[in-house]
Length: 249
Image (tube, rainbow, N blue to C red; front, side, top):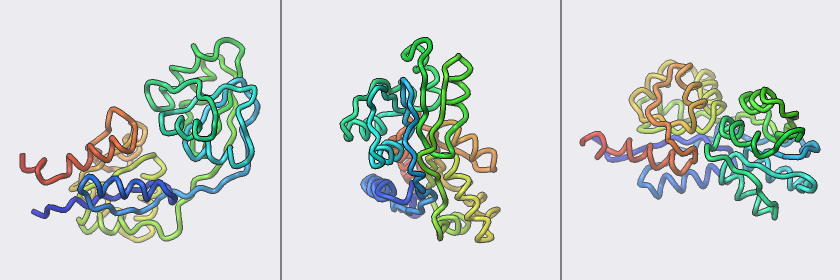
């Protein structure tokens, strides 16, 4: 049995893929970076609202680059990484839910915003309907501003061929869209069935149940969904699970 844990990771095609590869290497894995997302900014800024919700570090950075600042609005973020990005811009963060997800925001926002408040959700074009629908269902006036589109980078998909050849020990999906783009790339390369079969022999990890549900819907067996929805926790758990010492125990 090989001692190598080759771990494919599909983070956006920016510093996040580099940071992910560095983290995986520090955990003793051999990273296989294969970005499945690239950011196409719209140039929009968040619409006016009593509260502004950011669901990613990218959204914060793009809003700041476009000159937006949180004047006359309070800021909520989906998790600590997004909150850290907002604070790095000098913004005050008023709410981070205990559960780092759209569902967590739906639970946390209503008691915080109060009656008659308006909420703007500033995010990508592939945001979950859970957040908007959940807030509207409890009577909160909610609008959405699309700050960026998420597209698949040209040439993505080398890892699909490795999976098809049984040459991956692990794969880490961080959103439903990374799953979909991965499988689209496999299809374009003519290896989709073999890729899905190959992942059956690997340890597959997903951030959050929505990502895991998407993977399962497409026939991918999911082994790890960490309780804390952060990439560091995902990477640590998956590599630990994929390490030979785990299989030999």
